Length: 268
Image (cartoon, rainbow, N blue to C red; front, side):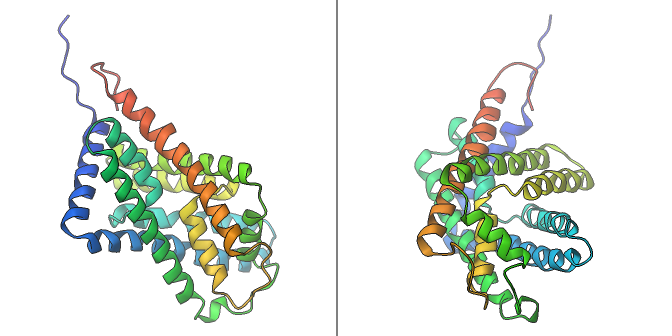
């Protein structure tokens, strides 16, 4: 029996993405930082609009707001993917797979991920401040959707945040995997929207989404948000980040890299 040569689209995409990210970091640090800043900004934009829309729809029915928030937030990842921005939680997949497949060295991958995370936060903080200069963000109360979301996340035990983080980035990187393997743009959008909607509707902890919601809350005139202290915020982000890495970097990135490091015909 004659064996055909099989090429993994997944392996090709991982090599391409790792090479591109490493090259941009080396050639122009601030351009890489700008792309990372935009990713945090895009998620903050859709978080802000989702929270306000959710409040409005909750006046009609108390269950409508959650659907609106999850749907509108999901567009943030669409913007990131189509506009080539740098998101830390998707880089967990790319860079972990790249290290395993020897497309990039661990030290360089860790530096890229660290810089990406930092500037995702810069983007979230910048847009968080900016939105709070607008009329829409005046007059928050203890029952505003954004306040309830942030208080709920801050009240969770660290182990709960960790497991919520694992699940969140499983959903996100199912979206990323689908985006890189599907060719048609409409199908890409549909699959990404579905996966992101699900994790947001469940209320799972995605660290960059939490950068966005917490930044919007930090700069708001309403200051009676339970648990919104520096130490508790860092605790929340830390355990979400670790969980996100397990969910996206190891359970998706590493395992799919292993699945595709093969001479078999069953590859992605």
